[in-house]
Image 1 (tube, rainbow, N blue to C red):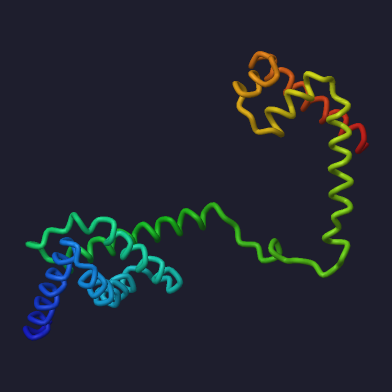
Image 2 (image 1 turned 180 degrees about the vertical axis):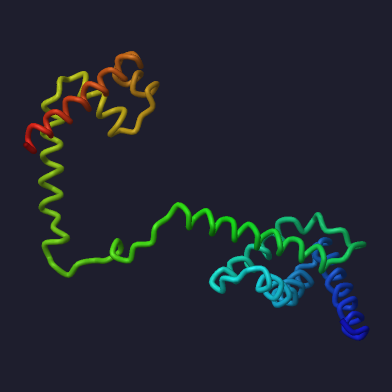
Length: 193
């Protein structure tokens, strides 16, 4: 780096540090000016760390949000560019790690998102028929099993709430839900066979 470029970098760092200090004191105009000025700098930093172009803007935005969240921690006596570069580097590393974890656990399947033009593919008659069958099977359960299943599984109540509503103990609810599910599975296997 030439001495002229180094001097320009120092001037820029001081200018941004002054804007940040003003922003810390509540100057909204200075803060808006700072964010507009540092965005290209952050983008250049992130571009060096992220080989994936589709990730760059996400990391830039994450860096600017982090800057906003931790702006009170900036010390005006220190280099603003170094502080911001450290934030950008951490956000880039976090994004790359997150992307790596996602890729190891998720499978991309273009066919999975395919919709079909065939009217029979989106037939709600089959869904309503299946719902009616399930309702009939639930209605055929003994009262306490049906009540436990409706409160705990279908009503999304906790065991304590279902116990208060039904008068059954939590242990009895657990047993009745288990028995109800077992009976439904057996009946479904019997009707499918």
